[in-house]
Length: 365
Length: 212
Image 1: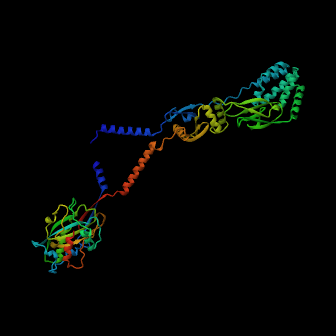
Image 2: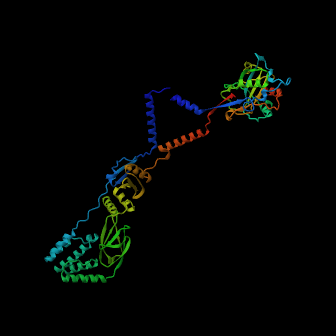
Image 3: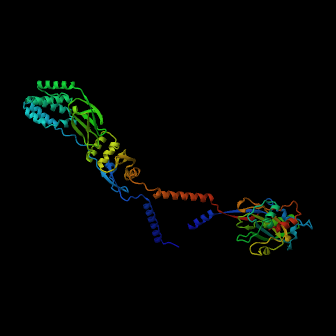
């Protein structure tokens, strides 16, 4: 039977359509796309990624917020005004100005110099206003908190009072105090690093002290503790909201810490607000590196050429178990390989066993 | 293009070979089986018993490819006879098939002055170049050449249409045969001979011609 060119073309097209359908049927398929947040650093060089760039994944680009700006210094103008009022003898105004300052906030931010000046002026202004008890209390606080005597001009009586308070505080015996909280939290006491991370024990003198803890993934926390009455204190912290987690992650990377270590991965997971996060960033001129984070743990890492970002995400999804790899026999390449091997085997068998028919002529010589 | 491909395909499926058949035990000789002398008159060759026409001896050269039934006996006469003896479980045939296994050609051999050597030389010259078969059987065979006074038309007749009869032994005037061989598997020429030690071999010629 002969084929017209039109019919032959139709048959050829049908063959390719059938092959395409088989290949599509053999490839991986997922009933519902798996949502994955994608943190893409160097987006300008790596390029954007479409939501459906990887079959079976629903990709959501995620922006990491910049680190927060340094806190506004509200203490310096207050202290300036307090000093002016003190120098003019306007002690009540001085005290009112100082009352606006939160000593705990200053110490929590380790602004010990500001705290020291605030307490010194408080002692001086209270002394000037004839409030001797308050003046003594301020001097005692300055001494108890271990603050340096500020480089400010004070009345001789006030300086003497502060000196006496420092001497009295130095004579007091330190007490051990156990601190519990989020493991690994950095602990400061009265604005000074305690030299240990929670849980740990510190030695402090009796009286009120400011304890502050800070750790990535949680809101910072501080509180005044009267040491005389406690042997153990708890410093609970609330989980950081996504925005803060992102800022903390950015700050860590800025400090040169690994972006996908245990803490980094946890912060990215909190930022994304979902269990699966892919983190990509350019490496060198041509490569892009990627990590797949599931439930706050890095489950896969890989790298590829910059032009193969989607393929890299696919690698991470398969390697990390986000997508299930199709069975070997469902992959088109498997059948291509099997067919090729069978073809080669059959060809080899034929080549080895084939014996052509021999036609022998016999002629009388 | 298609024709070229077809030819290439056929060439890949088929290999052609050519084997020469020597009527003697070595190159350029004629077997003693064609030079036997008459028992009654040893001065004459057995071939001189054939009829003479216009000064020439008229004989038929018949060459058979005798099928050994798949067996491959040794080359000694006794082994071949056993292989062809139905009573001993053997059997040899000359089948009528698409590819002829019986060749027959009438020869007119110059008598000249009656010199036996010249007669033999002329016989050999006339037989040279004859194509016995274009496609030899795949199974083991014995090639046997007989000169006989029977004519080729009678020899080419098959009584049952399946097998040829052996030539009449008593009309044979020469005979030689090869060892059992598979023609598709050998190289070089095939030599024919008659297993005798003297040219007084009329009886051996009859035995050889009647082999079947």
